[in-house]
Length: 269
Image 1 (cartoon, rainbow, N blue to C red):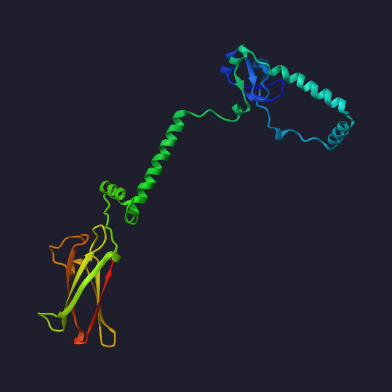
Image 2 (tube, rainbow, N blue to C red):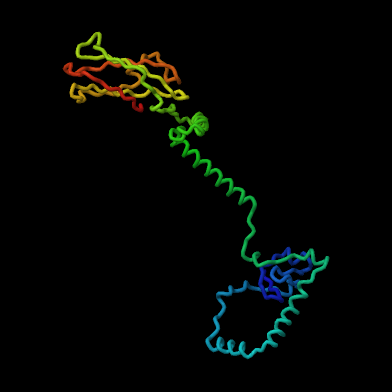
């Protein structure tokens, strides 16, 4: 149902509860005029202002001429009449406090169900948690490089079943001592010993060790990368403990016995 304010001619959508609250008396939310809504009911919804017929050129010219003819006195009289019509509507008393107020928003905004909004919010929250879980699952190793995120990622992986690689910082692993000698059992082979120590504050995985053999001219004769299982004893610890020395033993071939120099480089496994 729709009702029109007799003072400002604003049309509102009105409910049955508002019609029965004070015997049909309502207050306009635009000009605060009090009127009997049952006497101002409209049978159909009013058309938007945009659909009103545009004035013809003749009507426009006539309106302009009429506006010029009006004197200042007529404008003051019109203003006085407008105030006389609205001012009584602004007066209120104790009985008017219970009169429902209708506003233009009532015909534009539909009441929203609390439970509908609640379930929509709950669904959006669940989707956000699902997205966050996917990001942590697929990028857990990258996130774990940040010390502040690592405990969270570790706890997540314990429940999600993802495997978290040990923290790795090759730059904090130091080669303390290296030595090379002919292999005690095989010809054209060399045995290299190296001592590693982890200078980081956390335990980290053993690095890969890349061995390069060089000739007198500095040319590389052979190059090979050894994994942890190839240069450590089987009973060695699974990670480099901070400030604990570990010894690596590497056997390499010496092509034609021409190798006179070597180089060891630590690489990410």
